[in-house]
Length: 390
Ligand code: NIG
Ligand code: FE
Image 1 (cartoon, protein in one colour):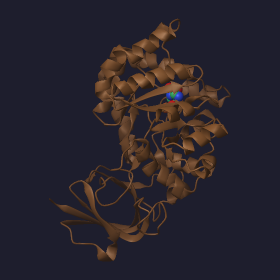
Image 2 (cartoon, helix red, strand yellow; image 1 turned 90 degrees about the vertical axis):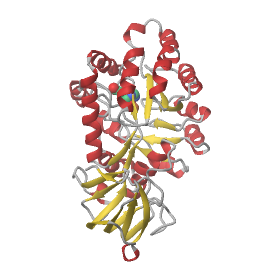
Image 3 (cartoon, helix red, strand yellow; image 1 turned 180 degrees about the horizontal axis):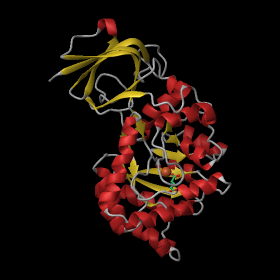
Image 4 (spheres, helix red, strand yellow; image 1 turned 45 degrees about the horizontal axis):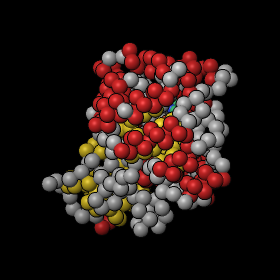
């Protein structure tokens, strides 16, 4: 077993409050990290670092845990640039645009979908993401949902069946029949390729009873629940997430006090997706209200061709800091540990002995530069499970 020592880190973010400065980020200065067998074997001060088989000198750069992007929709064909242009001219975002991507995705062959997916995952990796959750939701037939999930499964274990994204045109007169399909034959075909089940609980998509039926059926098939909740207006999604013990309620843009209270007294993570508000010119979620109530907050991209076509967690961090008043430390924590919590993972999102050796090296002396230098490609190198991938 060979070991690798990365040394001369100006700053090492561990997300272990027992280390370094004692903050939730557990920041060590002038630090080193040893990687062995794909895992972190040691972290500490550079001057105490043990010997290793090989050494990489990071020359005063910052090292952070790889980003955990816990919400994306990467299996699709085509784009919706014209819809974006119309929106920037004043049109509102509506759930219906999903159907045009469904038509393009159904018409695309596996090779094209796989190439698009691989391109987007590569973009993410280059920007420091080492774990990504990928949803289906642009197939909406038994065959198309299953093939989208099978493609996603080739790139990540964190796959989510989102047959309940929107009711497709052919079921416009029979939405209950579509829920039967999603919870019956489509679920049977998709469950082998998915870890999670999701539903878009929103006006124009699925109401609370349909959403509950979908997630309960998914759970019976071994898929854990997560929910698109309270994105376009107030609604019952967050309460349903808490009722069902979902891992995460995603978007959380329009919350009432009872929603915040319910999140605070549950283990449900509130996943905020500020790239969506940026790209739809909508009000941002109130991150401070959630944090003040003690809710665990994750940050993710929601990368999809409609509401937010970015693969960049650094952009989301900058938006969270500038537009949602999160501190740079809170934003980084939410994009790493927060994402890991939203995926119920404890092996990622942190850099401590036994964690997976997933990290990004920044061309900057501090993680603060992620928000301080928006739009600048600061990721110098990325390691995943101990292997350098960028
Ligand atoms: O998370 N809200 C539902 N799904 C995506 C948007 C999908 C689309 O517009 O194509 C979202 O924003
Ligand atoms: Fe989404």
